Amino acid sequence: DTAVSQTPKYLVTQMGNDKSIKCEQNLGHDTMYWYKQDSKKFLKIMFSYNNKELIINETVPNRFSPKSPDKAHLNLHINSLELGDSAVYFCASSQDPQGFKGYTFGSGTRLTVV
Amino acid sequence: AQSVTQLGSHVSVSEGALVLLRCNYSSSVPPYLFWYVQYPNQGLQLLLKYTSAATLVKGINGFEAEFKKSETSFHLTKPSAHMSDAAEYFCAVSPTGKLIFGQGTTLQVKP
Image (cartoon, rainbow over all chains, first blue to last red; front, side, top):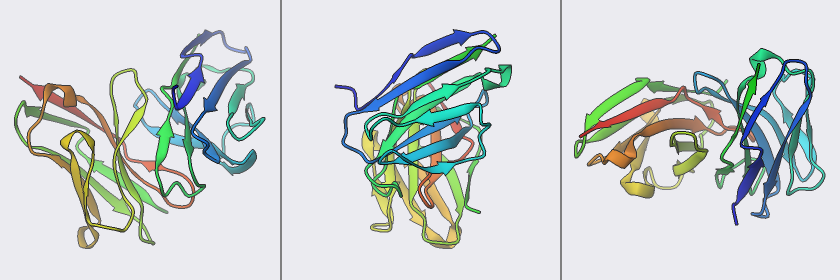
């Protein structure tokens, strides 16, 4: 009954590979997000979707492609992985696009590119 | 552009002592402000949020924060630290549709 669930929790892969991270929320929220946490623990938004529609794209390389098949899912596909992509990726959701009622985060996916 | 600054990347207190984690924001419009906590190898958990109602906001685990517009601050406090409070704390501001985080403050609690 996890509110925002991400899979996998850990992902180790070689440079150049393509990988996906899945996210699902069972809160009935309309808006979902991807955040990246770097090695210095700095968190920055990557994308947000509202009801399957992209509303924020924060100058992320086009190797990163989010996909929202329905409003409960927001997956992140990464092509041609680079060492610098190593980070923890967090999925989040909110009831409204402005996030006035707060955001609920998943437990993160630790991506290591070797 | 809106931003958040957390003063002190590392704060160390003794168990039972007052916890004070500082956060200053810059915003051209009335902000929505949040404090999140991240325990090791876990996601972010909402501690409390300010959404232009009461300026003193009470959150979970005994934490509270006071919004001071004149000082553009939203400092997080807890009267008595517990060992289980050791974690990373993030202040964040929410302009249009996204959270902008501060750099984070690591709270260490010594026995």
